[in-house]
Length: 339
Image: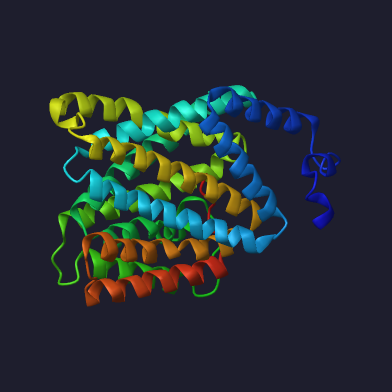
């Protein structure tokens, strides 16, 4: 409401608990205590959020589009600046930086780091680790648009597995829509009947992402969202650290471009996650998921802009089938919300 804009924190006092107000104050103090840069960044972000809240669901849809663009840009940065860097080195740098940030915020907000179900949190993290590793590998070995689209096809696997593993009800035409999406994926993975190795890895990553999101749905009943988010990058560190040590010098950044690449991947992932969270807080899961399918379109555009990659007719046909089917799934069923 317009009258809430001059002093949002006071006008919302009746709607928010003292604990949430205290947590918000502590987060702001944390950012101010670090550096002028972080202070400015936090102030700008708070201003954007306050203005966006007054616009309701429309702002949530724009947040989802921004999130999709950020995650596609993350892939483009990895492909452009880190083409020869071992995949696990990219996973490690992202995991360390994301973990450090999440731990700092969780400690300041008093959010439990271990959680109530560490076993399930570990499973979610391991699934995410496998998915992320496959994603970065596919980005380095496939046209950018194909790699991004394969990653975004995970709702099709969730839609196929959730009724079988979680006993969820399906809507009218559910299985035909799922088969259509999988047919689109097949056109990208092996349009001529020959399976591409990079595409198979990307497909495996998409399947692991779907399984990870199914564990998130279960964990969201008992765990704080920040605890779930924290365990993802945290769990990627041990395995990627061992793999990075094994490859040795090849994992060490050789020039400023690779250093910028590592930080660019982290920055895009951070912005994408924040925008995703803000978008899901303002718009329903079905519409949010449908709008997030702009991600493959951004992947195609970034591939054309940065690498001059023109999609094949098979890729375009597969993309049309996947995006159309997932859009229908988002309208006819409840899709799990990423955390």
